[in-house]
Image 1 (tube, rainbow, N blue to C red):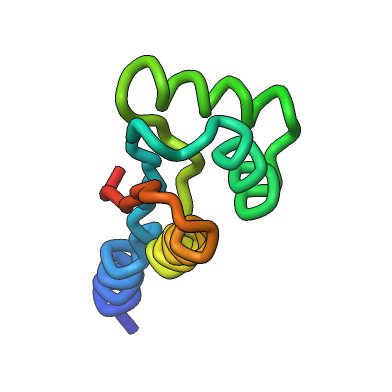
Image 2: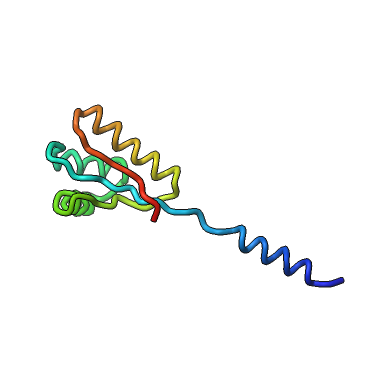
Length: 101
């Protein structure tokens, strides 16, 4: 029996098994959301240590945007929605989006 079929199936499986796309969760700066609120959201939603949350908050503040983390699409969208829900509940216009990596 020929190995050609086995090799073809193996090659097809390798081409089908691509890693899932990854998505960045990005916070956007605004003039109204307090810095301490942003730090709290980063710690609670993304489970970041305080020092890393402060570093990301400062990046958002200084450059207008900052990456909070990189995840599979469904996780990135969930985390983005959690940020938006918390901001809305607190009455802040904090914006968050997901971008393909």
